[in-house]
Length: 249
Image (cartoon, rainbow, N blue to C red; front, top):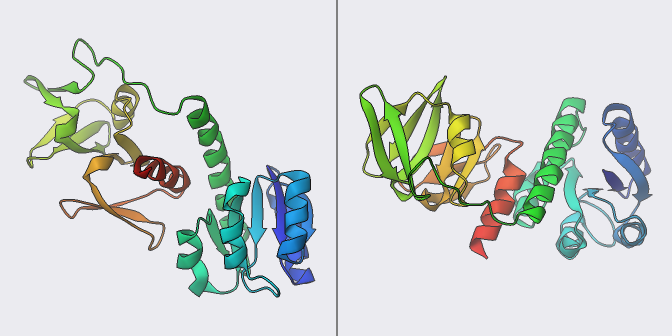
């Protein structure tokens, strides 16, 4: 992944460059900029995948600049000593937010999230909407859930979420019923190929039509219509945000 660093302080640019080059081999720093005007020239020249952007800068501040580069296709990671800009940055499309002084582990987690995002985005570009497939001998909008005494057939629109329970999966239905299946969550994830479900966490596979609200506190979580709160995995959040944005348009 090609990246540029935008920071009006020389030591800020250099410190981050050294940290990335030493600990994140997946990132190639192709340019350093001290302001938004220099950054624009670097973006036009190198077409970076990632922009590491400071907030408090002269001429044009980072949040204002963030709003102006949404269409340039680079993902923006804010790098700031000021925690209070985090919400505004995320609301305006920032991919992530790193607090100065940047910790190596936090930086590596952010880079890993970027890797997952770009890999997943490539797949989405090639196949805009997941294909709806047959489920056994049933139609694609129904599924057979086996249990100890046989199986029950339910419509996908009746399912609120799947929850991993070790090697089993608990299925939560809209009418309040809970079913326990001997299939793993991964098997359900692989089997159900519609754009109405999203795996937000290793434990949770959710019917997105049942989501009432998405919260940005902490690593982020969703609130379902029944009030249930479920965490969004750090590595899932960028793709989930993109997925939900596509659903809204």
